[in-house]
Image (cartoon, rainbow, N blue to C red; front, side, top):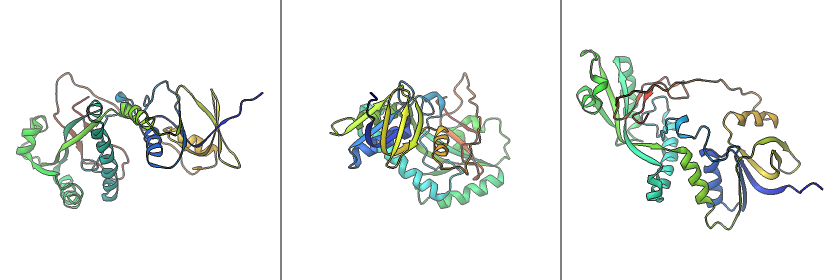
Length: 279
């Protein structure tokens, strides 16, 4: 006899920092009483959220020169929520992040003109973001100035509060905190692979390699696989994925003191060339 599928109001598919954050928010700050989280790995945050698969930067929009004013404003608000969460955890939160300064470098007349316009506009969102000239840059990041031609123009934006976050540990923390004293039906299924999602008259049937789950609402937070499942349900057929590769370059000696970002094309949705002191 086939076992009856367990029913949840919401099922979150994918246990990275995005899926776990959604699981946390729904359990803590809504009247939703039953939530499932399904993750294919045996631990949370093991793919894009894992510490060696990303630069661990908590983005605010001050040094990300490809962000629009509106995007920077919303990104800052979201990132401040993460900071508040980490600080609320006290010593446990301190294990998940470090604070380091960050710098946005503009080189040459064209980039500096763009930087100056951006600096004036974004000052409304980032009042503590400072403008530095060559002499100050040399004090903070000597390697940027050393060997550079004396007549090459450079300026930079500088902030002392850059957060480096272990998003894998943050994902685990979100779920741990969600499960504390909620009085709700919360299920976390690790090492469980979603094989198929079937839209039913009411809700969705989620078929995994371990069990079947029925949910009124599903949230698919599975990186590039999200689009695959969306298309299987008839959504997002006009979209496609363009794979983009990147590289990490490491040094045997300490080169940078800050996260150093360069001016970027505002049409580029991802980070261009930049340096991280923690890599």
